[in-house]
Image 1 (cartoon, rainbow, N blue to C red):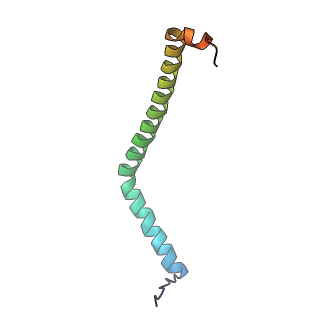
Image 2 (image 1 turned 45 degrees about the horizontal axis):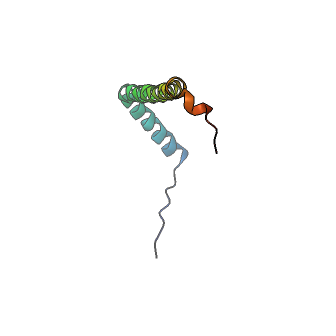
Image 3 (image 1 turned 135 degrees about the vertical axis):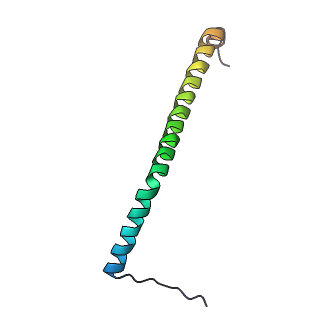
Length: 74
């Protein structure tokens, strides 16, 4: 039989935990925020690259495979 351990916090303990977490987040934010910024820049670059690739595919189909569009499909 497994026993479950339930932690019970008083308001004072909870406030202390939140205060400590906020201090830790404040200390690590100079490292965390640039990493998040790099991540979002990378996501934006990936989105842009996929858009450019779709545009290039469309242009290649339009200019080099023009005749293929006019053939009847059976």
